[in-house]
Length: 176
Image (tube, rainbow, N blue to C red; front, side):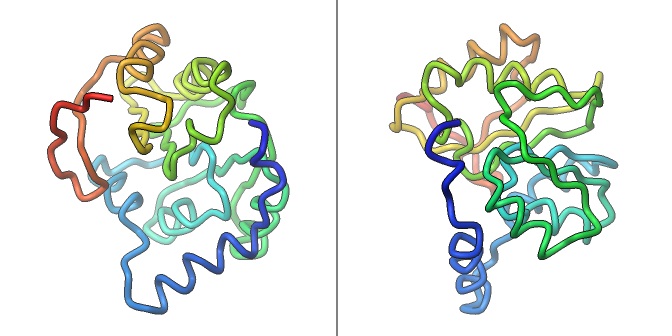
């Protein structure tokens, strides 16, 4: 996942800390995931661990994975008790399944276009038998819903629902 490995984890986290200090809710992704009442979650592309840490605070067993050592370093600083792994999601094999695998924060867009199918495939391989892959990414940035849907279908996943926001607003046509 080229270009992500050189992110500055502390600077990235500082943005969210400032938003939270200003009264903004920075836990929309965690709120959404909790709708499924998961016991365990793989936070794929976890960055500095914002989502994973909040899910853990709510009693969920969480594993966070990111390609950036700087981002994982910040996550470890913030929550050393959690499991953090530096790994490329396009090659991930944790030999474990989860009730929810979440890719929040435009994870597919940080992945090289030719590796996005592999990203979805490897994340899908970690979804338990009755689990879900939950992804949130901006449209109009080179990865269409059609591309994503094809990758999910080829990975053996079925579309359950589509939303426009982490608040659960119903998606429109999704044309991209």
